[in-house]
Length: 252
Image 1: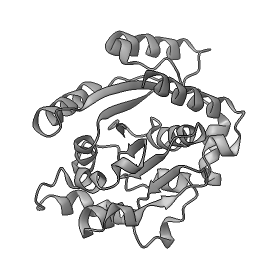
Image 2 (image 1 turned 135 degrees about the vertical axis):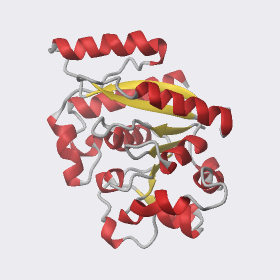
Image 3 (image 1 turned 90 degrees about the horizontal axis):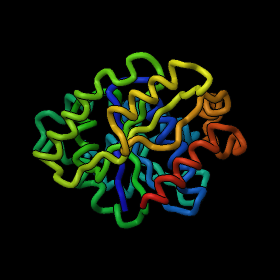
Image 4 (image 1 turned 45 degrees about the horizontal axis):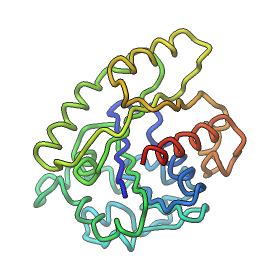
């Protein structure tokens, strides 16, 4: 089953929100999901209510200390949802990976041992195109790109698609674009609809039909360490991610 890298080198576009809530929605719909947090900020980790300061094992231990990935997996509150957490240890990993052998494929090799246990693997990437993101792209089957519905939404996406194509050519021939997800969407504003039109013009059928709205409950949920579907299942944000999960399952 697919491994999806959630990627955009711009920060604040909803990568971690998407990882947590799409993962939680897929699990709520009865599927086994592994979240892999490779962002040193660890927002996906804290978004599931995990205290990063108390962790002895994390994705850093896997990538740079040789810990089997299975030993770093924690169970989430929703049955079927698991996570390999990130901590501040990961902050130096970009530099530490440079001299290592096959530095772009550490994550792929680690994931290979557990991939068959999960129907979906979602990798939350840092807001950069460095070695951690390259590891995610080398390990993934597909790329999911969140794009915020505001000015400069498409800025940098040509660079990202160039990197994806280079990874496909050099490291991972099976890598494909799964879809572009418009986030923080407010259909009442002209700007949001213009951005959606622009994204559709650039990416066509690769744009998800589901848009993620600006939603207070979605913004509040991480501070309670819960996915929106647990925090307020009736909220527009929770319902949007459930719709996205259903759209992905329907396509599959």
